[in-house]
Amino acid sequence: MLTEYEQRKLLPVLLRELPNHKGKKAALKIKDIAQGLNRWAEVKVTEFVVIKLLEEIILGQMLSGVIIDGKHVYLATNLAEIQLYMGRLDAKIKHLCCIRERVKQQLNGYA
Image 1 (cartoon, rainbow, N blue to C red):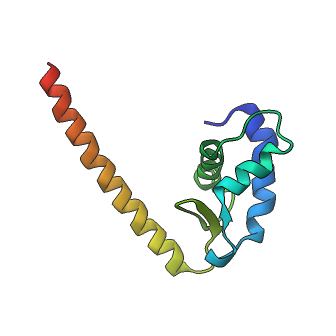
Image 2: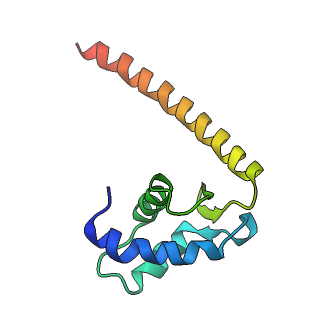
């Protein structure tokens, strides 16, 4: 969930800038986005905050084809890019579920 400042001040900047970065070759570094926002923002903008903003753009369907690829973000130019991204997300979900199961097993050891 975004703070009011993130929603009113930072999110519109990303929504204006992202459409200029279509395709992997035009990807923005998340680190560079944070640094750019920090030049004028009234709060410290970390890479975590940028990712949170990008995820909100995806969840709110504010832009189509947003791909967060490691330390970069760009807009997909075709269906294959989106399908590849979905496959990576599925793998990440599976991996996180495995980690959760191991933690749950450890938790049972404390009971």
